[in-house]
Length: 212
Image (cartoon, rainbow, N blue to C red; front, side):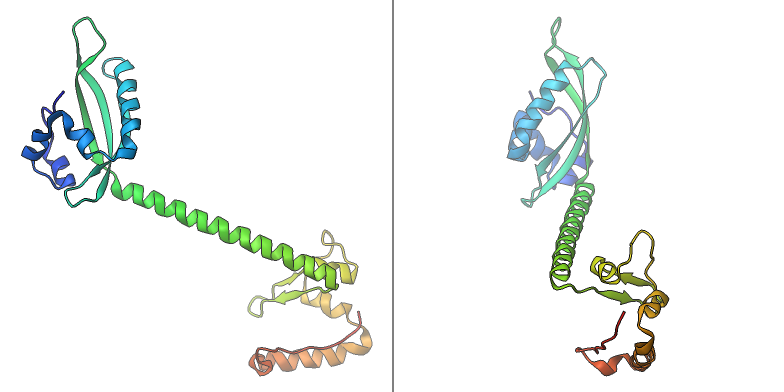
């Protein structure tokens, strides 16, 4: 087998001259293809030989650039001529496109998704540990977005207040109404003071005791 013709674009992709590729002849693929892709190429060649004339088989593989790096190519091949009376291909024609950037983008997306999954798993594990610690310490937590006034309550917060998450939606008003009437004015005054100057509490924040 030998390489009869290869277009100029392919040589440019690999940083090689037409003469260099033609000199390799039948050795062009085993010489330049990534070793890890060679077994898959042999399976591709067998699949191609079994296809009907005119049918196309697609194969993605790496070829070595003249600078030593690897370029991903995607080839669409078909058998053009076979041995008389036989199935063995005598000539295969194909068109190879450089898909290195597409493969790199797909790998970047896969890495990003893997990172996101890992971060999500870590966050879920952290949340589970926090829920366990809160249940063990009988501690509930709540958060308030001061810009939107959106409120979130932890699972243990519901337990402490004897509330059903399916019935009671988190809200600042619901929290305020849960405070004992004798403590309400004191708590409201402290909250108003801290909201007026959120930085005043420093990293330690502030605390207040009240009945519910």
